[in-house]
Length: 350
Ligand code: NAD
Image (cartoon, rainbow, N blue to C red; front, side, top):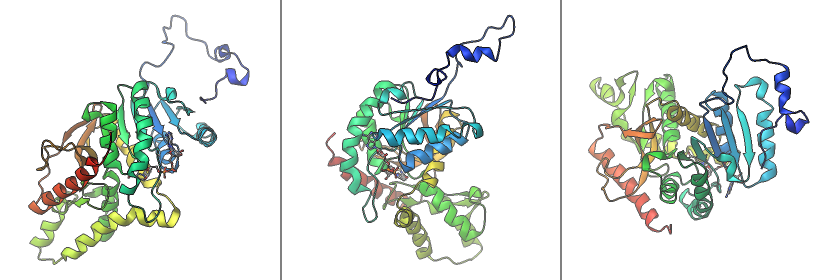
């Protein structure tokens, strides 16, 4: 196990800190901070490290623990982050191949597993990553029974279902990063097209993080103005094929980046860090994330399927699912996405 460097590892006794600062007379100081936020990142590859470094810049966590199966690479990543201490908010960074390092986490982010290579679908990855999850999830839950699990590894929807089943956690505490990233890509493309700021574009992709994702065109707005109905009211024509092309561009984004640089990292780093912030700072913001979707938008009550819906996130995880008005076609596509994921889940042995 590697931990953050301590004074004693440098040959100083712990008392050395008291040589510089003395408590004021009459002070009553707790030996440790009473409220520490701890985040663990399991999988210190491209995605895990992009998430860790984005969270570090946010001043969100007091402690970040990194776990990976490759001990040397892991220690290198930990030291590299620790060496930025002079430029960052104060955070204890630790790492280890043993999951004991994650004990007492508020949030455990799981990015471990094989990653998709160019040409491979996310669903092809499933069997390989299922084996990894059977090792990881019992360890995580043993050491942090009260944590929120945030799954990023792909195929993220099915693996979030797997994490829920293996953990025994209530469904509000098992979340997949889902289409939070797809929705950002969607907002970027729309903003580019309309020449506005992406932060002013409200637009959701829902359903599977993958080929069957659904773009909710009917509810897109810019600065509170509904886009499609405004175009219709002003008799500005638009082709349905343009809309589908944009959805396809979102779906193909990851493939394009993987083809060019080998993996994706920065956007997923920001996407997951934004989820961590909403959860641990109880922001009650709406994010499209993968959650137990049975009973919502016409998905049958007996289908234990995880897919993305716009959800309010806070301290307890998923606080609720937003009732967005969908068209019949959008709802039909969402149910098809649920069917696709349900069929895959049926083939799993967990
Ligand atoms: P990577 O290969 O760089 O990193 C994966 C890490 O997991 C490796 O360091 C590996 O050693 C570690 N690992 C494997 N098995 C482990 C185990 N049993 N215990 C601990 N660590 C283990 O891959 P990456 O590019 O970082 O991608 C990670 C995952 O994130 C992939 O599944 C990828 O498809 C997924 N991803 C998801 C999204 C999304 O939007 N949901 C976006 C990008 C990537």
